[in-house]
Image 1 (cartoon, rainbow, N blue to C red):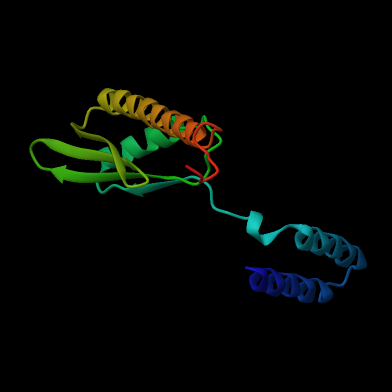
Image 2: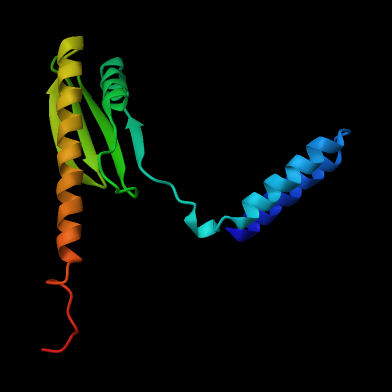
Amino acid sequence: MSILLIISVSFITSLNAQTEAGEDTLQSKQLVKTSLAMDPLDLEIGEMIYDETITKVGRDFYDEFYTNWSNPTKIKDFSITIKEKPMPGIGTQITVLIDEFEILKQFIRPNQEMIEMLAEYTVGLATQYLLNYQEIQAQLQSDDQSGTGIF
């Protein structure tokens, strides 16, 4: 990670050395100092929402879910995957996973009102799942659950 940071810093420095204006070079040196002060281990990818839909119905569901979604917790290292399995004549089957744990599997027809209602419901389910997960993690890290290892 630090090698990548050093390479990017040297690349930025070499680009700025090629500029004609001295002010840009000074500003870039301040930027370089700021980026070196950051700890590379602090950089992490937080929550991700993956779109694995195929049809317009699945894409509409994903768009509604993504528009309504906001993370209510301090949990940052999770991913939400929205999958779709088209079923001709029936509609499509939407599956929503949080970190490979299935929270919803539902058939849906191409009706915009149903898609919006299901997306809002799914946002509520995902929110509740993450709140429960956060509460369980807090309970497991409490003083009652930690011990000295001596029986």
